[in-house]
Amino acid sequence: QVHLVESGGGLVQPGGSLRLSCTASGINFKLYTMNWYRLATGKQRELVANITSGGTRNYAESVKGRFTISRDNVRNRVFLQMDSLKPEDTAAYYCNVRYRDSPYWGRGTQVTVSS
View 1 (tube, helix red, strand yellow):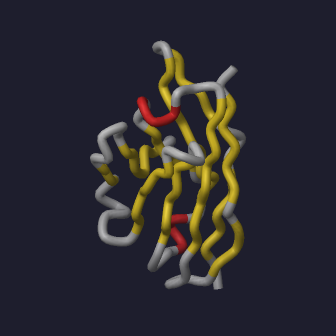
View 2 (tube, helix red, strand yellow; view 1 turned 180 degrees about the horizontal axis):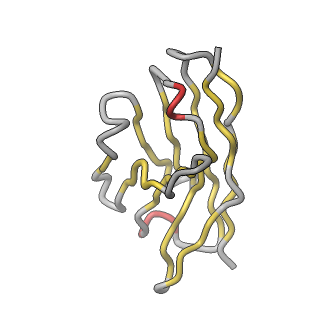
């Protein structure tokens, strides 16, 4: 059974940083592309960043240069380092993996950027 658990969200001031973590179980983690999505109130779900099994990173234009995705294939974790945070980054952030043609999601972690 695939299980994803996010952590690291919280309240931060504009310009601040947070590091999100997602721990995966139930899959051979190193073989899969891992994704971070976010969902803000009144907006559509957005793919923020992903990292392939080979380590290729992709980012949404809105976060390029500010967010960094990485992975630890020993501890089955994927991270999202978020710097220079803006109020528009406020959202619930979800870890996602597509396994055997089905998407799996964590429960999410809330990020609030406000002064």
